[in-house]
Image 1: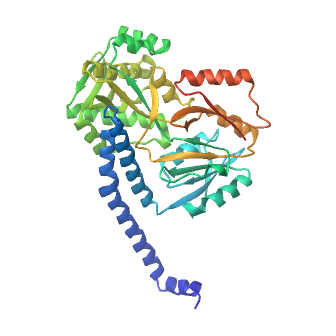
Image 2: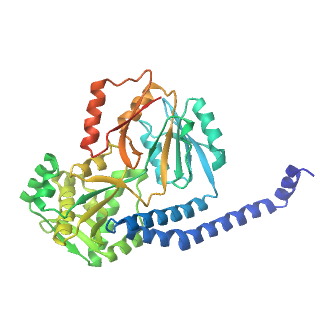
Image 3: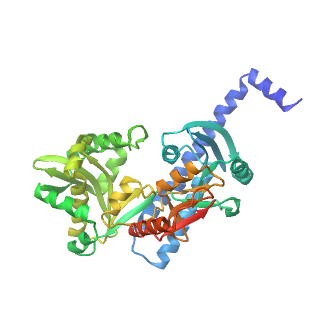
Length: 408
């Protein structure tokens, strides 16, 4: 009796459907166990290590904890990836990833002038990827793999660059306030003068009523207004747990609360959580509420004799507005060790319009432990020497190690 006949018989008896449900529940229970007993405990250890003072022993321990934790996340995928086709009006992209994460949605938006239509192409095991990637590249596709960092990469497959889905930006606040502001650009200093003239003020609060005001009237409206349908709004309890570890920096204009940020200290590091603007009001942003909030965080950390402010994760593109704003303060880039995946871009013989579009994004690639701005060239797309010098200058100004120029 063939396997297909057996499957048809089981389907008629209703057994196949029940087996599918039991299988799904089994793997869901396994994944919940891995998260609870393996990944999340190591997340807490990793957070502590990330913000501990630099030391060779600490660095090796952090790498070990990170690898074991990432291995747990890899086990949850059962070594399988899903394959999607992003279809835009002018080009298409193959996405190969471990899950339909927020990074999946990010790529769907930033790789096209308008969000792409998604078509599911199936699943595959990791060991089959080289053959699949070669097939897609031969068809002229840009291929983006979002893979666990534990997965070794075969760089001979095609011209390749690796981009972290997130990078961290931070600021040294162990210096005097004059030195801190000397590192910010003229635009930030000019806005700060206006902020002081308008008499923005702040306080550090641990009152639950202030947290409720922040979550419902600042955080949720700000995130949803800014990011619309791809906003990542974390649950009330998650934010409350963070608040109880520290408190809330609440910025006021007169008696009116206008902005806030969750904040705690960890081993001499100020760790701001999510921020928000009252009712997501863009007029308050224009008045300088965001700049006032960032200055309040810096001042609070400085007054409490902390050595560093970790301003959290940002998308790794020079033309990303949040990254640009943070770098105006003189912040430096580092890897986000809590992000367990990386984007691997593979491409060959791309259309000139797509090459130009990718270059306009200003992707930041990981190269030998540092960061470089990606510039793609081809027979049809040839930046001049002056243009490359200009991009090199911009990359250095953004505290990068220069350019990564790749010929397709």
